[in-house]
Image 1 (cartoon, rainbow, N blue to C red):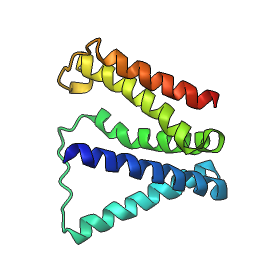
Image 2 (image 1 turned 135 degrees about the horizontal axis):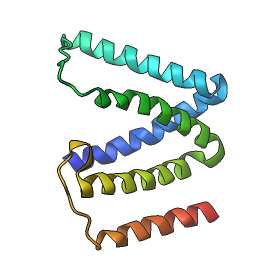
Image 3 (image 1 turned 180 degrees about the horizontal axis):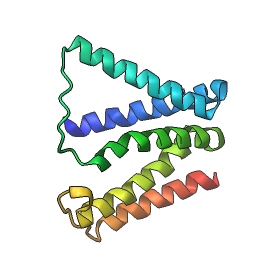
Length: 140
């Protein structure tokens, strides 16, 4: 179930990057990011109202965990910029490669409070295949 949900997330990300990139072609990169973030704020606000959820922010939440929002802004901006020059498939493929490298490092060393999941050499085969595939996409 969760693996299928993760595939669905990937499909939505491709659609989102496409919409955001096209929006940026109309509104410019920075205004498009603002529009996307305001739309996200309105959407989650409506969901909270409809579901009658109260915001109960715990005081002990480490400050650095709020940086995900700032990272989201930078991510949206860079996606919009790359979209114009690389297209959706190459932007997402290179992004996925970067995500995979970062995820392996976080997992292997247990960074940011995560449990450790050691990297084994068998996974190098997957990285090599992904890198080869992306290299072919770049060349052609």
